[in-house]
Image 1 (spheres, each protein chain N blue to C red):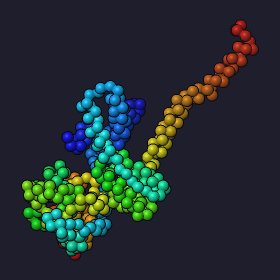
Image 2 (tube, chains in turn yellow, green):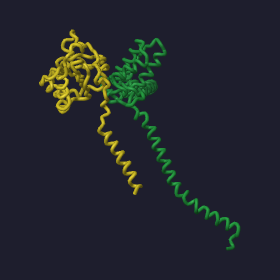
Image 3 (tube, rainbow over the protein chains, first blue to last red):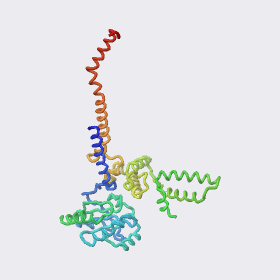
Image 4 (cartoon, rainbow over the protein chains, first blue to last red):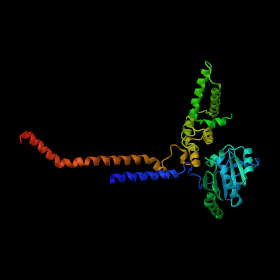
Length: 176
Length: 190
């Protein structure tokens, strides 16, 4: 009897591990930046390159930093969701236009709508490195004190907005 | 034809590039003797052109820094193509990270400082050789744990298969010995 039960148990344990492995996303790498101050930046604004926006300009606000690019395929999928979120006016949305061509980027926003309060250009990807960006799109939620409170890798879905972003933003807005 | 399109057709990895450059060299030397399809040569030329574009030239004054540079870029993981180091990968992020390592070395930053810079941003995952911590404990001890479990099972099984033989020995062996002695003493007459 034991002869049959032991392999069966082993099989169940292995199947359990494999099933767990199927559900894990290897692209989801935990960011060490959560609950740390958002890295500083001072980057030219996409629509008016002579002006720069820095992190200090956003102090006292709850804001999203959405990393996007016109060459990024899944950004296209995410874009309507961001447009919808922007219409609710619950938070400032800053776009980090990552390693993109400004003309293509502006054209993209013209065609698909602009959910961003402001977009800044990171053409060399240096701010991207500071924020640990490895897969565009990525979205950071930053609180009034300038701390990163949440990071989402990959396109944000409507469910993510409803279940994660909106409750978190409401909570952060309520903070002093 | 745009180089980008060629890149889509052939997955170009630095190693593949090296081979292709060699093949191109062989063919171009060969073509001087015999006629080869011009289109083939053109294709290879386009591909290797792309490879040449991918080669980066880094200038170091200090030979020690060259070593540190190569050590670091083969220790850091490319987060886009997760099973490659940034030395092996041609992904955009890998290029940026190589540039970052180079610049920091030129600024006189130490190896530890560069590793700290990377882990602050990307976490321990960026290291191919992560430090031993509570979080990475299972990663480091896992193989030892498996080995020990395996050994325990082997020892357990070996003992169990030996056990029945041992049990018979005590009583039966003596009986056998007695019988053998009796046979030796008395011969086969009885």
